Image (tube, rainbow, N blue to C red; front, side, top):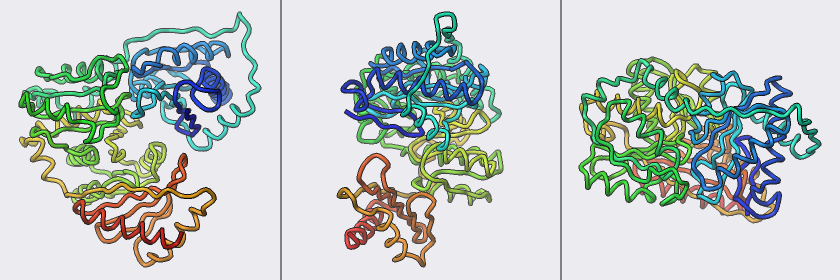
Length: 459
């Protein structure tokens, strides 16, 4: 059993002993700490709550709601929802914070409490440390019977979210409708099965082939939207001669596409394509993390704009986007962050912008993909023995390649012309992650092997 405590939330497998899995005791402990921290920080006693369709979702929801009530906080429960929908709802409800009950792309035995601040954004590193300290000390006083919080149910945010997406100037509903797209979708039997069909209908898409859209939490395949998990949607696209396929993860903050021939558009290129469209109409900088494809930099610079890279993690991407006033940003895992709507990864706004772009391009989706620079990322890792000096190893690699362009804001990234390699130590496992990118798979793997050999020589 696993329990991981980090600034992005409290994540773990359901069951087991307290402290070793996401048990009721852990859920109560961290929810109470979060609620006390939010109220102390904001003086606001209102929390927005939403969840994906995981099997454990209702159980976790009941514990979270009861705990928040027990410390005098009022809950606005959105029910089955998405991460970006809750993020939008927090400031609109003038709440002190929000909790999304989802383990994102993790398998069904996992669940998590994703924690938001009063802006509807993920809490910062320093805030996360404060919260975890409160939880570790856990001397929380609970409210008396006359001071218990109340629960309000609100199922209007599905439509509110869609309405806000449709109202964006760069979303052209008429162009999408006139394109007469036939679209297959895979929503992995989670809340995307409610939200994505509703969005597509609102965008004027009449032909929708639904796969795994029953929000029952029984994931039919690994829920991370990687090519090896998407064979069925690929076959559905080809069988129905659909124009494209759309795939989201369980909490609908990651997005990827399938080409009309069943091949993958590539989740790294979700952001590239959307940024290309946005930059055509809105001059400004772009941001992704250090482990994302160079194609975004190429597209940005071709548009005469500036690209910047942040440390890995949505919070870091958002902070850099704010500091450079970026018009679009995100992560290579299919996460689109469009500040015109809100500062959070949002598959709904990604779908709307991408379909507008595709409709106006007059191209097939595979032709659109072919118009972008071609890169391939190789993902590898080295398992370390306990007690190894990871920082020292990275310093030795850095010294060896000191004449190359380097970044040390998050591990070590080394550039070799248009190739790069990024080394990061994991926060949760005794491993070094090694991502490398080049113009094809063979060259990316060769670069990774070269760096791995360097590391082993230092070991």
